[in-house]
Length: 392
Image (cartoon, rainbow, N blue to C red; front, side):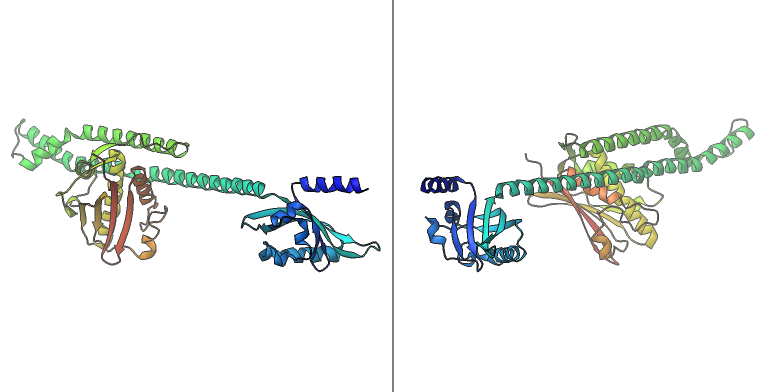
């Protein structure tokens, strides 16, 4: 029998977990070496007579004691997760199997238990959980991006249509002059009764440029669609690359956007552009044009709606960045609009979708920059486009 007990003790020493026995008051009656080392003792004898309140995991003693009492009261074994702090401060998660300990008469006189360290498994499960949450967040962001892109396509396709509308406006004003000139020439035997004014001649000559302008707008629409398809493809890939960015001059891009925008009569005169400072940046000229188009469209809408205001554009150099400020003085926006102005589907326009500024934000971020907004309600609203400086 003695030899069997020796072998049994050797087996207990090798077990990769704790084995312990407590009386009904929570005092340890014995344990294996694994449990003793967890408590910082050289020998199991040193833990005898102590409670969990006197051991390194004393901060969890209330929960441990509550579990022990419940098992002794019900007489039913349980499998529970418990937390333990070792003598060196290490935090462990233990999977414990506890059962009531009976005397010879069947009376419950304590608890016998074994606890296995499952910290590594728990941490792995937590990492897997965090990875799954991150994946879901990425998927949600991708879906939001695609939603904004889809809405932006609908939103921004109105711009070239405005251009075609502007061309139609020119035709409507120029063609009557041609008709009048035709009737005059016919009546006089190909000799006009009056000389056309310089303005009328220029209007007729402008008609020759209209087909090319229409072609340019169609080409612009094709490029616009291609860029959106590329953006959608990038947003759903694992590797987001900005391989379509090129070195651009801010002055030329702003000038090109203003020259291309379909202003109604008198609208261009509302712009005050300070040209004294310009800079180089990495970007996409077409996407930058869309940013300016969105800002112009929003500002002109507010100016017409409130019957006041101008548009101010100027650039500044800062220590590590270059910025473009775009301000209109049409009356600004309330704080609850400004706070969510880039979220998407937030708009003050009656027929607006609110995706224009959301796409501006995504575009600026693809350039490695930012766009922010500040406003003084009743006075102005200002957008700040920040670009990283190009290393030279």
